Length: 270
Image 1 (tube, rainbow, N blue to C red):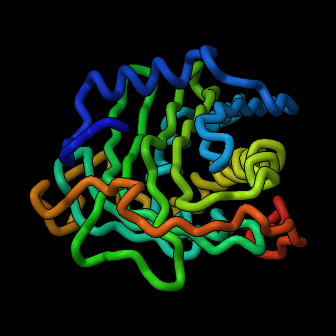
Image 2 (image 1 turned 180 degrees about the horizontal axis):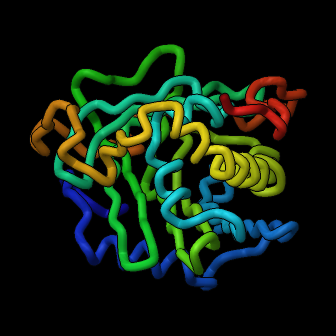
């Protein structure tokens, strides 16, 4: 999806390619392996800290279907994802593709980032894939208080391994738009990514009870007839090329104690 010249909805080959890359070891450097969580990175442009990151967690007490629901449920994400600033759906393209907005807190003193992405999803036997890439939408231009990042290819592969047993692989190639200091990449792979995986796992354990109290039958990602989003045409969208956005040089910034998005892993979800 990284070489598209026009906005297209991913097809089966794109999903197959994403699954293959998630399962491949070629070109990846192991940076973290502890407590059932593994993280790899691929440095693409060292001077820009441009890299791919891949994380995997084994969830031996979570059904693949539950994890799939948690990743889709935008209202629940606002409860458990302490890094989210704002997230909302913009419109639907097909029964398994939509466009949405997501902004997140970056480690201090970096500026916060946001993206507009075309997201698509597909159940594949015991596996589920959700993936996205950046697009431009005329009603949502870059904001002055954010740095517009570019998702070149980002997604999740859930692999079912039994009734309540699955693994989750997160693969991301994001251009953060700017020259980042080396400590950001190190912090991402050594601390932020493992912490996010642990938080997601805990959110999965609490989701069935939460969902019972919050519109339990509403799952438009499973039941497209429930989707009330306005329809978008592909012609409304354009590819978000990284080189068309402003670069921010943050390479000389030093790490500071981050009190944003560092809430305890014991945060309750009510």
